Length: 370
Image (cartoon, rainbow, N blue to C red):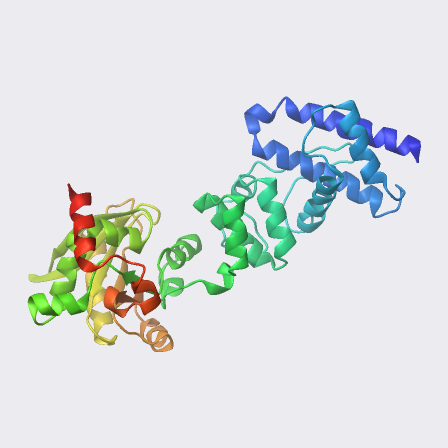
């Protein structure tokens, strides 16, 4: 067994030294490639019982002696490398890894992010740390969940603590996806999935209090709600999602000589498209869909730039039954989703208690505007 340990230490040491010269250039990709290759090497020799009991501990100890100050190669971490290889070996579309610890994972970046089953976006995979990977594969066994957390870690820049919290809270199974027809109306599958993940099924407009608005304006209608959103557009965009730019409220369209006005018009950089938002008081009605579908047709025909994707429409109302909405939108030709919103006075009391009162909120808002 002693000879096998000497050979194993020599091979792993050689791979480490080789990778250290490339870390400055390739950073995380090189580290993951190294760990994947070492994991393969350890897996093949331990699972076949070629190495005896305690071999991993002995290898780790000997590496520490021969490379003083070396970090990340404890016995636990060497076992994690083995797990890393074994968990992803069957799923990653990779180049072959030879027995001499060739540690290059593929450089190609998939052009279809999260769009095909059993596919991993390698750019995202290689961009998150080994610590993140171990957290994901140790807690999550389902492939789609793993892919989801890799993607979210990449785009949201989560640290390992945040990732741990998201997994503990079961974010994957508690996503709030609005009812929509994006899958049938957006032909590019990647764009469709991005759109589905961009919007939530409910938004909390905690800068708005309908009780106070009633006192100020008497009748609270769509125009009052619209004006409150425009007055607090920065807060609304932070609530609505990332990469949104506000274009205008009451955006004028001319359709065959007739004037129409979109309540709120945005542009989203991630989706590279116009997003029309129609505000409605009360419960969702099917008549709203035809109106918005017409607006989207006009936007695509007269406003959209040649390099932009087709426009998306969102109906924002106070109440909507998800299965009814999904039934109603399925035959429309333009991508439409329906979300609901809640205002400050509709929040549960336990949340309202931690917020400043309305006068204090106004002071804060005035301070921000200055």
